Image (tube, helix red, strand yellow):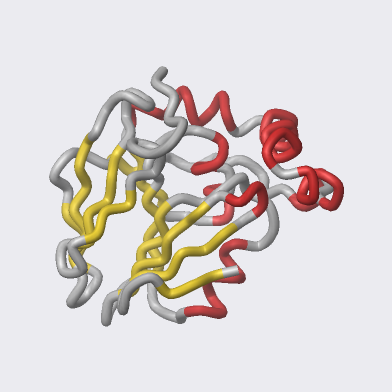
Length: 173
């Protein structure tokens, strides 16, 4: 499901009740995080927009990087590459969904999972900017949850997507 949370931003809820964000400018769209990688996230985003898409992964945990395998142009801090590889394991993703969402666990099969990302992550760095056309995203490092975690500031909306860098129950590694 999805809901509009600002004129340029939609929150998408995926299996395991994880949140991803689709931020749309006049020229491009950014997908922030890809959830556990269950179902056709790419196809779903294409029903919402036909603009060129860039994927920004806030950090390498399985509930943020799991669906990256459907996309070609994926950015993530290189400090989290080893973590993302470790968290891309199909069995780990299935166990995590079962732990957090009994209903999803009962209905999700191994065939529903997107294969892990096998490309090369493009680097995300503190202060990096993405111009989507009238909407600018600025990446800000906020280390603690993982070594490479990044938050995404929508400059025009003055909103920030924390990707687990801040919130209830946040664990530090």
